[in-house]
Length: 334
Image (cartoon, rainbow, N blue to C red; front, top):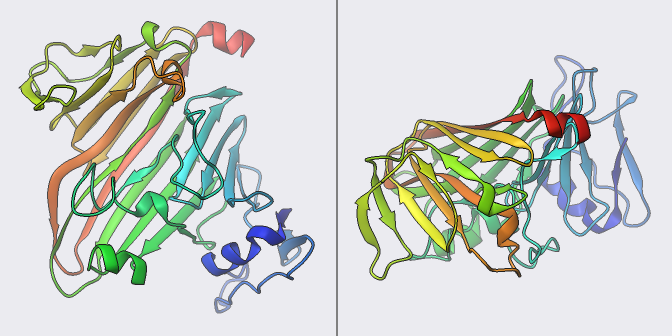
C-alpha cells in the first residue's frame, strides 16, 4: 500500500492528478488526507500505482520529501518530487547513481546527486545557478504512473515568472524497462511568444574509485571547452577516453546523440545513451574534495548548451537511457 504520512501529505495531494481504474469514468481529484496520523490511499480495492506483476510505482511521504519508488524484478529506482530528481537506480542490488555526502534531503536546497535538472539555464546567468527546475516540487501525474513508470510535470507559476517571464510546461518520464532506466524530458512553450532556454541532466554516477575509471565517447576531435582554465580554453578533444586525475570540468560540443560509457572495474560498465535534443556532454569531478565525496562519483551530463529557440506551442524533447552491464565479479558477489 501507499502510506501517506501527515508531514508531506498536503504536498502530495496538491501535486497528484487522480485517475479512475474504470474505463469511461471522469477523472476525480485525490481527496486530501486527514491532518494527523497515517493513511493508506486505495482505489477500487487496490493500492494506487501498484498494478499487475511486471512492475510497481509507489509513493512514500513518510520523510521530509516525498518520493516515488519504481520496481521491476530485481531493479529499482527512486525519484523525488523535489526537482523530479532520480536519486537511485539499482540493478540486482548494484547502485549506478551517486548522491553526495554533503547533499540535503530536507528541501533546504536542490539535491546534490542523482539526475538533477538544469532548466531553463545551465550554469550562471541571468537567473539562479542552473535555473529553477531542480529547486521546485514537480507534480506527479497519477494516471500514467504505474507498473514501474513515473511521470512528472512542472509548469510556470508566479515564482518562476518572477525569474523568467514565460509560460511553459515540462514533462519528465522515468521508466524501468528490461535492462535499462529510460527517461524522456519534454519542454513545451505555452506562452504567446518565443522563448529560449538551455537544459541538462547534471548526472552523478557512482564509482568505487574515480582514479580507476574511464569515460569513453566520441570525444576525439570534438570541440572542447576546458573550464578549469581562466579564461576557459577552447580546443579539440585529444582522445575518445577521458580519465579523471585532477579537478575536471570539460564540455564536449555536439557529440550527441550517441553513447558515453563509464567503465568501472569494481562493477562493470554503464552506457549513457542520449538522443533527441541532448547534443553536448559535460564531464565534471571536484577531484580530491572529500566533503563532496569526489572519489565516489563522476558527473557525465547530457546537455543542450546552445540557446534553444522555441515558438508558441513548440515542443522540444530529449531522451536519456542508462544501460548497465555488470561484470562477473559483481554478479557473483553483489
